[in-house]
Image 1 (cartoon, rainbow, N blue to C red):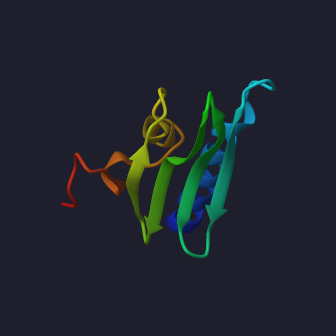
Image 2: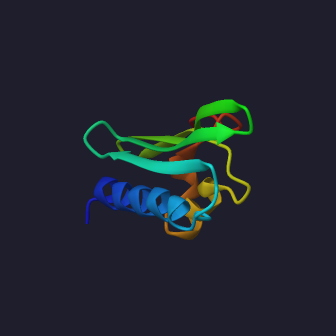
Image 3: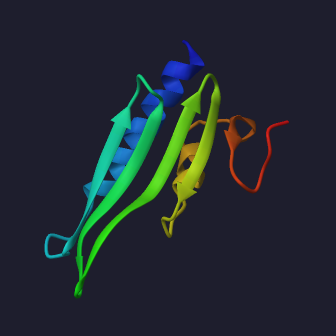
Length: 101
């Protein structure tokens, strides 16, 4: 199987699972955005946080070939760690803390 297709599926499943278990009464909603053609996978958070409108990216990963570039990962339980647990090789993940070898 093409690893790029597999990584796209793992990214999509991880992003969708991250937003599936939201409390119903929470004012801020999470939305998965999975664009396999461009290779962008995001979790958006929008809604009212007390008196302030919130519109932010909680998670953003780019799939380029067999590399996953983590642009943002602001989840308490790191989605990057979940990607690794779900089969993404750690050497195929690039974060701001790690550079491409």
